[in-house]
Image (tube, rainbow over all chains, first blue to last red; front, top):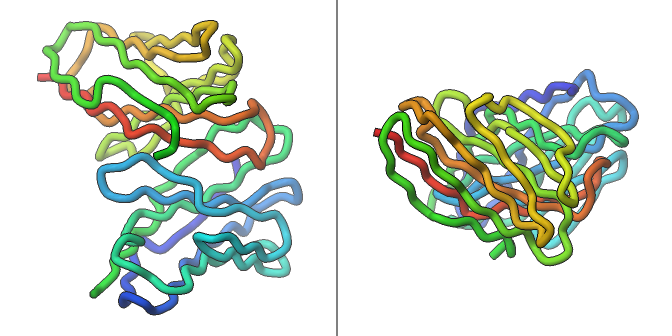
Length: 111
Length: 115
């Protein structure tokens, strides 16, 4: 599986936008970029995924670089409930659908 | 609520014992995955079943086994337990087995403590 690199941690203020970066310089053309998050004491939950174009859903936006070697998860207005570990994961078309988690980025949100 | 249920929520047992963790997937999902989360190893994929058949194996010890039943619920059996098996065990489900776009829905986990 291609590898992703994320900062260990980030801090943000409540009600401000948050940009969580992910580098994936060895991404292949058939790799989808997925984001999951894990709130304290809960199982991971799906956030968003994309292939080439930027994507929006009710939880977040995903901005994908033109060369696809990096992406950014954008939370438009952070809330205290968004404090979690965010995982950037690559999933290859046609491959088994298991998830390979890295260390993720721990997001802290200040009131 | 993801729709995935896991029982029990907590389990405390002694070394050398055997336990069974149970998972019911979301309605309509055919794939079940098991993951282990420990402080030192992070979240690791153990095994996947799709419609009753094993589809993929990850870092699953020989002391561990799993199965998926005709009603699609799954059980993870852990035997000859060691202190290092203490961890959170998550079950997840998805509609399909392969492919890069299926979301996985995770249950709340079973916290296993081996004393």
